[in-house]
Image 1 (cartoon, one colour):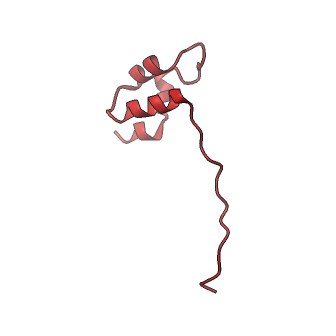
Image 2 (image 1 turned 60 degrees about the horizontal axis):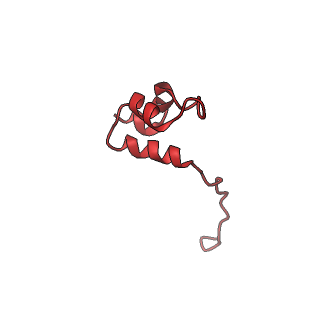
Length: 64
């Protein structure tokens, strides 16, 4: 029984845009959320992400 193969469901792969990846890299040196939102996102193209509040929701930002 221990040597049987198991089939585990895998979640779909996560994708991110080039801008999302740039913003994620900006979290590493702990740049302020307002600066990341201002520098990485265009409010006209990504109004959902171009605010400091949106950047504060990222899990890595909570670890400060």
